[in-house]
Length: 440
Image 1: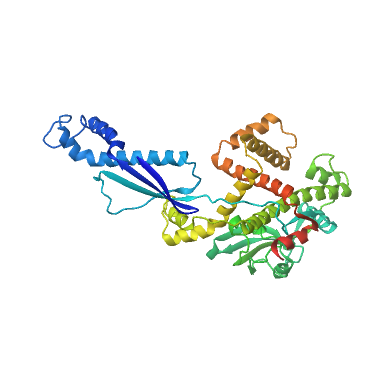
Image 2 (image 1 turned 45 degrees about the vertical axis):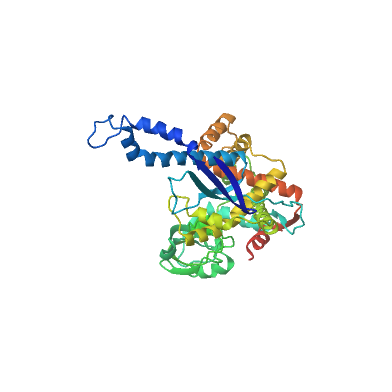
């Protein structure tokens, strides 16, 4: 068999395979012999059909099956031997006039190649690494919310800025229908005005755009998925079912122990210090996530390379349970191109920094995540045996392995960029961070 590559451009090639009789005749003969005892032809007993009749009835199908096996195996081995780094999988060129009886059979496969490119992680950039602090205003507000949360509910006839509203967000057109309890001051300052002076039974119609200071709160209160949360701008109704004020809880040892465990917080000063510590730990995670997104955008914008776009659009039509039309593949490619580009950049960055993700990395990351999760539910000192048992169960799920692996890679990328790109550090309040993140 003769196999060769024909270059079209830097990221597109065709693999041409010329198959001759010698490449498959032995396997076809073997299959014919295996078929003879089982062949059934009218007028002959089973197993007594002459070989020429077996070949006539079954030979064409067997020949095509065996040629396909030979071609598929040769193609796979050729890709491995040539160390081709492919995007997608080879696509067979369709030949409507293909002659299976020809002495030499030619098969052609289109392939898309991973482009060659370099990335400069130390390139000049204007990326900011935010240090988000919990200021007095935020801490005092959290103390007030704790007192309200653990205080006594007092029914109200008319809502005010400090009321809690129980009701249902709904929008039939957008698949939103969620009953929740929400404080009026949880809404953005602009939106709060629309929820004051209301009575039970009133319906408030609002836009999701600007409903909260942080769009992510739409996930909590409207049950909007993460993918669609940013920039969502649709109208929803909020039907008020109950209005309550609150008699604040007393800040005493009983409340402190209930919140944080016995003896861990003993005064208002301790409470504020704990709130500050916990809030800033959470803010650090959000700041890292923003930094990673900003890094992604910077690298995608500043790392130029071609992709085999037309090949990938054709390939997208062939994968998945539901075959896509050309128009659907065009839309899907546009949706996924940015992610594909960053995936390639990410792999190059890890390779340039000689970083490999090992299973031990995955286990350690999962273990730390589980310990943090357990601490949130009051289990501050789990044994290693307990944690490793949960790790083993989690990593037995392939979907979880994929999700956690992506998080490990993201963490490694963040470390690389912090080290090499030297982003500008800026200390801000949480309000300033939200404004920087969402332009509000």
